[in-house]
Length: 367
Image 1 (cartoon, rainbow, N blue to C red):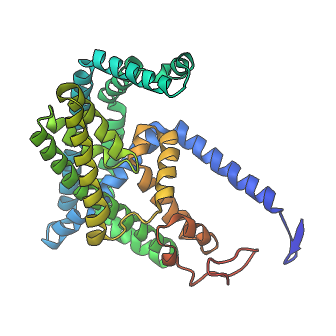
Image 2 (image 1 turned 120 degrees about the vertical axis):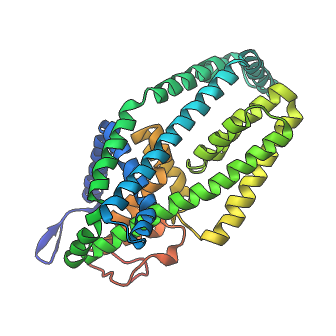
Image 3 (image 1 turned 90 degrees about the vertical axis):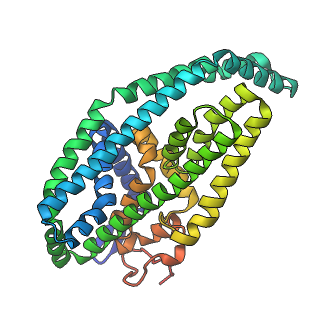
């Protein structure tokens, strides 16, 4: 141990072990409490996204209590409609794809045969792919849909949390004022978190809806069945970073393949890919900038991490959860902001104005 300012400093390996152990313990606790924490965080996000509606009602000189109740009812209506739409579309999708069980099995066998022609051993492939056979995949998806239909606990936690947060909504500005006087840095971080999360939900929802509607129009033109189901699926999977687009594409492409052949399926893949790339990779950044503020790699890793901790709901909340950690734990601490240089999509945006090189920590600019 080295002595610094009269105190013994722990070796860096020991500090790293302590930090990693604390993170593992925290994530393990989050996983154990996921049935409560994930719905509560979802409710917080919904209210943050709808807060501009509350401020708009106040500007119309509506009493704060009435504006809070109206905002809560709006969030409640949106949440209920979303849950019903997800359950209906998922159930319809599973029922429809189940009808094509034989075709899925034939496609699976053709894939195995194609790999065998490239020199792979068929027996080894079959043993390794037992868990992803068409029947097992449909069974897993069916159980997931059944679990979604019975997710009364999640809905109950979200609604109860919304009720209590709506009761606190009229006094939120006074609470922020007190916090700002006592801990201005934390208040700034909290405000940045709120702005980031709100921008994420509003931007992702708007452009996700545009992409989903255009996807639906393309499916109608191509004559693919159940276009409304695929529109809802495309919109929901839009919130899943990196792989959501692929998840929303596979079912309609398979349906087009079984119903109309490979050329229609290829047309579905091309139309989805072009629309997704043009709108979300070219048009969206020009109008909104970077609403998320994390790099693509961090976005993908956050998907893996939070899905492992919170399950399917963690996949939908992956980026907001990462923004929470970034704004409240990293950006709020000058000594930890160097981590932000590896998380953010724009390293030059990292604030190093109040960094100092104490306790052997250097700022991102090398001072």
